[in-house]
Length: 306
Image 1 (cartoon, helix red, strand yellow):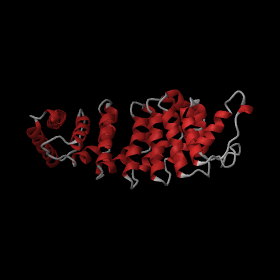
Image 2 (cartoon, rainbow, N blue to C red):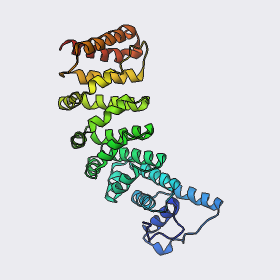
Image 3 (tube, rainbow, N blue to C red):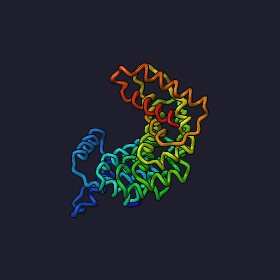
Image 4 (cartoon, rainbow, N blue to C red):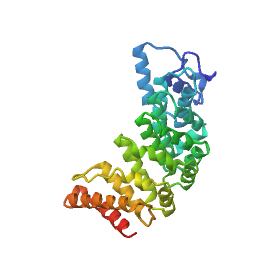
């Protein structure tokens, strides 16, 4: 619902921000009344407001007023999310956003019908959660992961990519987040992303899997159990030059194959080993392919040892 404390006709971020800042003034009576300016004056006011040193909490609160208003248009929503993102790189500001009730607002917006609004909200969630345990816990408790996992099957690849970014921020190096992701069968929701024709979606998914499984054997076992390895292996190609998709595929396969009991048929294992030999042979002299070759050798050794 529209905030009744915001003056009628003032539903733009600049006006609400101005209103909020006025109400943080120790002498609010001295604040000038809002008015509807002509275009030139509107630009002047916008520039002046942008130049002001505005209290972050006031700016965040003003942005949430817009986002929670039924009268807000798409441009208002995008601008408000941009304001939030401009402040939350500071951990304290991200915590303030959560304390202001921002998670309930963001949870609605990550499934918004407008692509640009939805993707901006998803990126905001990712940035709020980045290396911030307080915010990570709040987002987990408010059930963001089920909504984000559902987004992975969205038809818009940018929505999928942004959802992966948010998921990564919530589960990498944060055990409670990973535990919840596992509980909601989030690993299975990643598998369709490994079959995506969109390179960005595939690469982000493979990199996330590699990052999660490269350190913790129990996590590696979870992914092996869900048979992620053979899905990744289907993407192996004996390229003869650097390829970002192949490098991330090899990185993920290298992580998953370490100290793992992979259930591969003899035929499938030989097929993979053959591709790995070709990758090594074709790229071992190339400096730009050094990581690819090293990953391929690691996988070859791991598969040969079992």
